[in-house]
Image (cartoon, rainbow, N blue to C red; front, side, top):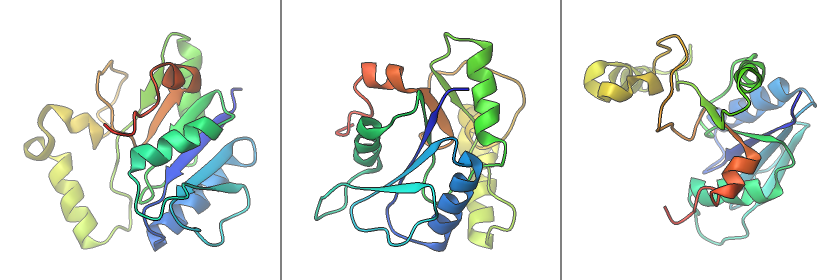
Amino acid sequence: MPQVSVIIPLHRRSPAFETCVTRAAAVAGGRHEVLAVSDRDPGELPDGVTPLLTGSPQDTSPAEKRDLALAQASGEICAFLDDDAYPRDDWIERALERFAADPDVAGVGGPGITPPGSGWRERASGAFYESPLGSGRLRFRFVALGGVREVDDLPAYNLFVRTEALRAIGGWQSRF
């Protein structure tokens, strides 16, 4: 089984981030590394989560944080989460199945589904993005529509990319 580097760019510590890193560490289960990248000391993190600091006195972009983590990542595959999201228990295994099924696949992604128990504001914005009106042809980003499809555009959350392929294209190219 390939080693996975789970990368979480942190904007501000929040209850959502705490859920994110706790769930990511549990899913990784000590078999995979979890890197939380922040401009400031993120405070106490769960066992198995490695903090990486940008050293910047001002806020850096998520792309810059992802590039910093990419330089430190030891996994064959990088998995990306946003700091306000959290993975399903089978998140890593499901992605690795897709990579194993086709060694030519460089990236695997899934939708950003509004989690159960979300507040009404999150549910309202989630409902908008899940609708054809809100997302049009990119609705697959927010709704599990079933099946495997080839796409040329995936969001940076719930995304797995072969580390070698990501490094070959220069990472996130932080100035994007």
